[in-house]
Image (cartoon, rainbow, N blue to C red; front, side):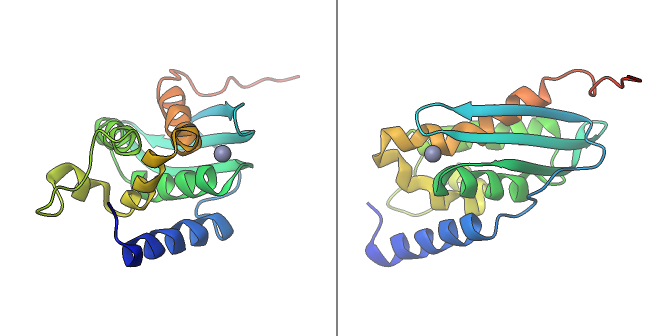
Length: 158
Ligand code: ZN
């Protein structure tokens, strides 16, 4: 269980990212993109990546959603900038394990996995709210779709 002080700190970070999302806005020349929708809550996201070979040079998002989906997307863009595809996929797996309650700090404090999550750990609280898990993971599902998009968007002359 999180103690109250920690919970408040987490809520502050989530609120901050909701009100002032990082890397929010369309990118000029994304190499990869995907769109995601969470019908349970109505959250929509469009994620754009600028990949330099295997490395994520830049990531940005647009869309509209609840506080949790927006904060999760915003924190995700910060966490992924500069990461390789494999590193991004590892963080993504850890994050999904976190919000579904499979990953948590032990009584001794952080584990290797929870410390690797860094600031993303503020979303640990959603594991107590199953409906919110989909809000928190929307950006990450969309990331997987974007990373698996093999080609950049085709150019059209029409
Ligand atoms: Zn939501």
